[in-house]
Image (spheres, rainbow, N blue to C red):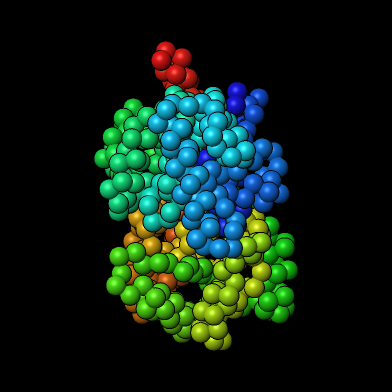
Length: 422
């Protein structure tokens, strides 16, 4: 059996890294004899972190430092593949070597799986590449399974049309929160092929507590103070008339919240990274350091990118976590650390509802520092209560791993049957 994994964001972000690890584990446990390949813009980097997978080059990718050259290659590659699709080609004969191999691998696979995550929305330009890869599978009648995903919003008519066209041909779609379930139904996904399952990072709970303790002692000295934790992100504020001003306002409010949290609870805020540095890619260290400095003595900056298990171990030492990045919040929940979320998309609200903490969500575009700090203080005061709520939720989440595997097998089988009858 040949399985191709698409929609992979990969190893630069600890949340995406965890989702990729979990998706690979899901596939290997479900189909232990399958040959697993993945598609990514940087297959060399992926091979370092996920060596059990054969990595292929994304169609239309360019690493040129010249922006115009990158755009030309991106558009040219996508257009060439789209032309092959129009003629129902299985070999991508006119594409370049790497793109041709990827096209052929997808068109001739036994199953194409969309990696778990939040890439089925058009805030990012990568939506076109992801939908193209899925379209190659769909037009060649290869069964498609979408691992637990946030779907939408689609702001543009063209991307919504193409997403609808692709998703209606899937063998199985799993959404990771209820809002995405509704989005999938609106896009025409047959309800018999649609299921709600938790974000896959919720099944990855291992934590390196020993190294975490050593790291905190290096940062804080032998007497580690009571901690809260946070992550930040350079959100683009789509639709804003002045996104740069909105971003600066958000960063200032995060720093001010850290000060208010210290006043109200005595907790110092640990500012953590979630994006690594790599060749040609700048991580989030500079931005996180900037906001930690704005928080003054109320904040502690952790300068290193931490691998997921170590990051979970560090977060486990916090009494509360109030992050913007979705998966740092999920990491906290896996360690039974109560969460207050700064939501930038509906996926954060949906997952917080699933965790039983939906009342502790503020929106990135309209929260105020004093209100957020008050929510954090309330959670700290009732910390044991919320730890108990998380325990109860995870007791229900854990069995869903086997149910997800069963739905994957069912979807792959029904898709293969349809392909064989065509």
